[in-house]
Amino acid sequence: MTGRRCISVGDEARFLRIGSVHGRRIVAAILLVAGTLAGCTVGPDFKPPAAPTDTTYEKGSDAPLPTAAAEPAQRLAVGQKIAADWWTLFKSPALDELVKQALAGNPDLAAAAANLKAAQEIATAAHGGVFPQIDAGAGVERQRQNYAAFGLKQPAAVFNTFSVGATVSYSLDPFGKIRRLVEQRQAEADVRRYQLDAIYLALTGNVISHALTMASLRAQLAASQEIVAEDERTLSLVRQRADVGIATEADVASAEAQFAADRMVLPPLQQQASVARHALSVLVGKAPAQWSPPEFALDSLVLPPEIPVTLPSELVHRRPDILAAEAELHAASAAVGVASASLYPDITLSGGAEQIALMTAKFFTPAGSVWSLAAGVAGPVFHGGALEAQKRAADDNYTASAAIYRRTVLESFAQVADVLDGLRHDTALLADARGALDAANHSLDLARQNYTAGNTALLDLLDAQRLHQRALIAYARVEAQRYLDTSALFLAMGGGWWERPDLRPASAEVTKTSAN
Image (cartoon, rainbow, N blue to C red):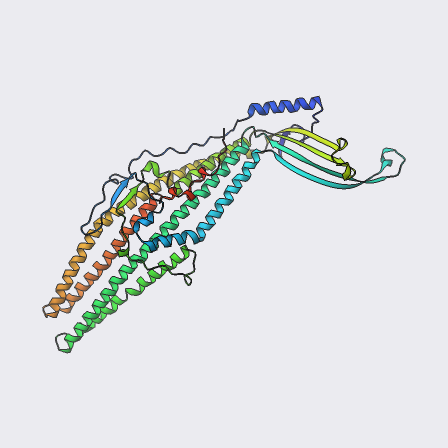
């Protein structure tokens, strides 16, 4: 057998006159079956994955952060909520204003908001399928009737026919195909909502990251410029000593080489700062020629002393990437229901009322009234295995979505663990960097005094300067990294977007249609 065939009571929605006893019995029988099947929805009822039972992200991750002498201390507040505007904890009005501009002008955020609205409209359109479909129509037709065809000896008649009326159709959806489709579309709208939340979170995080990068580069540029200025002073001193015969031309050449080498550090740092500025202009939706961000400095920022840490069982309800993966899983579950319901028959009721007259003045008279009521059942008989294959594909997609959800959760936990480790290492590294900088400062002072007094060679002074240079830049980088990792932990915890009324999850806004 080839092709496909469906059982159809009424042959293409054949009309059954309600005045016919036979017709009334068929309609009553179909309604009785439909009432028996009402509320039957095939396919799995979605249940969100169970929250993890872990209490920490890794062994020792809830231990207090170490402290460093002469550096601001930080404390982990386990279980405490993250503020929606967490970036305000850096106490920088310029940073707050920058985030505000980005939220107002970022094109990615605008595109995600439009995509969400489109998905919500698609869900609303799907939900319309659960209601009766009513359509109105009107028509006019000119006809010529040849009575000779009926054996009558009279001339042909030409006349106009006018009609106006409405038709109603309603799918009883006995096995829940429409309801599962509505559920799927609403879950897909949830995915778009959480993607919007993720873009919001990434946007605020990128703004803070680029601003902190600019502050770090500014500190490194200041350190490098100080080193260049120190090289210039050293070169002047060496030249003075060479003029009186204390230093040699080789000493002058070495000082000049050191001065030139250190100046080469400046252009790459300036280029990195330009890249960060341009990236910020894109985030706020401006061209670099139209807008420039404020200059940020680390000493103008406050390191948040307390960092909220969300428990793993709560993190799965706070990170938008995890929630998006859960919504994808929900959509895949509903798709299994749609594919399952396609294997069963569908019952459709339809009816119509129409006025037909030879002239419009005769409308709405009993003689021109025509109405009908029909019921039909259509079920698959043979589709070449296509419907069963679609059901198996939906099952496989659900399995894949479940694996993706699990991977997303694991990656999220690993990210949090990485950042927590980073903060601990930052504190220890910052203490070492501060100690190295203090030692380098003392060594440089001694080397300069000894060289001025003629007790050491120029090479010793240049070595002390190089150590001081590396220690100064390393300290600036480690200090900035501590700020960056603090920001990264806020983001890894979900960034507090949940506390914003305008960024509530779609499940709180889209009315769910019961699948039962």
